[in-house]
Length: 383
Image 1: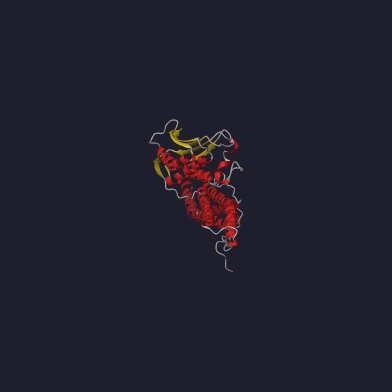
Image 2: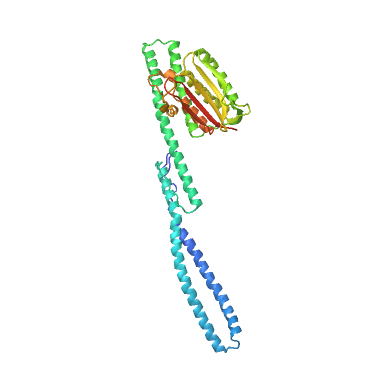
């Protein structure tokens, strides 16, 4: 029977050829003990009589031949009897120890194999306890658990991604369908404006898909960052310059000021400038959406406690302090009554935090409450 591509065969890793590992270990260690016993017996047979005769002649020289033969026979019988009993007892004790050790060594490997089978069958909760039998087996179980956790995390991200995309694509698809059906039925005029609206909805879906892909890659640390050391102040200045026109059009004052204490030009951070530029663009876009004409947004670049610090402070809508972490959840909007166009897609802050985390930094939000402004703080290691 042919197997479909991309599926796991239930027989992978379950070959039944040959004895189990526990019996292989038992037989191998038993052969070691038997070879050692035979070696002891041969060496004792060759060496012991000669040493005995040498010491006997030193103590009682000139013994009659009959007495010598009788002494040799008694020594040989005593030697082999003692060796036989001793080796038999030692062999039985060794076999018992070998059996216990073989089971102890084979059991964790069998447990890992069973957990791997469960993992292949789709049970991503499969984990293996540490056996406590040495660093190698502990490393094996730790590596397996890490792999299982990564697979479970990837599956969670995949399912959440599908659910989020399905949810967010529903509205633009419904809008496009209504426009196309209206144009076909003659209800909506078949004009360039109609198709521009359809194209705008298609562009919105494309941006959404691209953003979701970037978020998933960032969360899985698969962005392929190309980092280099750059001045933090230069990054802030470039971001402010890029957003200045939008802020001016909205009647909002965007300022770049030194941090507290002021950052020296020599303060460097190792970042992918393109990805980090997207982070600052998302944060400045978020501040723009939640600010009002006549308000001010301040960008500060500085250094604190050995870390590079970049803050974006606005005097706009703010948020409840309890919502600080939820702001970075995909598609979360603090004010459900707010128009979707003003609230954004709900992915920008998620993407920003994921990219900052990929740079081994942190992104946090703070506000004293609704209507009291917000501060977004990026902390990065100093290069």
